Image (cartoon, rainbow, N blue to C red; front, top):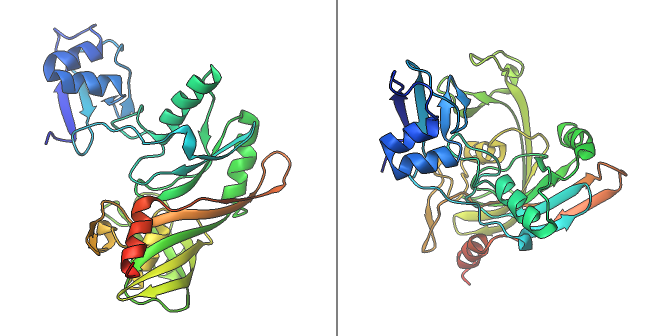
Length: 309
């Protein structure tokens, strides 16, 4: 497996030549793909393959963690709601919603843009209204028109979007649980929880510890696992995953936070976390939208096997 990034020192012989040409010359097919998919970086900024080289600079070629590129498995059939302002899809698990350091072509956003351009004859201007993790499936909202961007972001930033996630976690959950903690990055850069008393404290990265608030409702208890509704009342990165891990009930498939990657004969490549329901006011007329989408097959299979089906 190749490294995730390769540093190339640009020489006097490279000066003035397109960066993409240099990368292909030195790295072959891997370099060609990296150049085509937006994996070239100078001075911590993404650059294009046609940019002329400057001698003495170091070009960073960012590569996929697994050494290969994969487009999000999204089709028009994943659309669950659409109008002139909004596009809502049932995001599959195990794909990125936006650009990554190594790829601008294979994200949900990029693939949807290509699909709608082929369908409608022109490329839409899509913007993500919020984020879902790589492994998380379910409701993802995008704007289709610039007039929807600001009001839509305000809906999510002000907590007017009411979300419910389905999750399968390990252990035994109470009928109801509620966690209020601090949230921020640890010294090593990973997300972690802090005591409530530390909310507002400045962190080394320049950010502050923020409030994280999640409510949990048990839906079904299995032997050493549980199907749970997770209701985030704030929207912090990895919030549900961190809160369940802190309860001693990490999500199945969530290896980062201690969740097992094998259950009932299944090998899990991502957390069993699904954004199942969302209610929000429409950004143009304020009318309430209530959206629901079914869980992906791997989620359904895991629950069935845990239930003895």
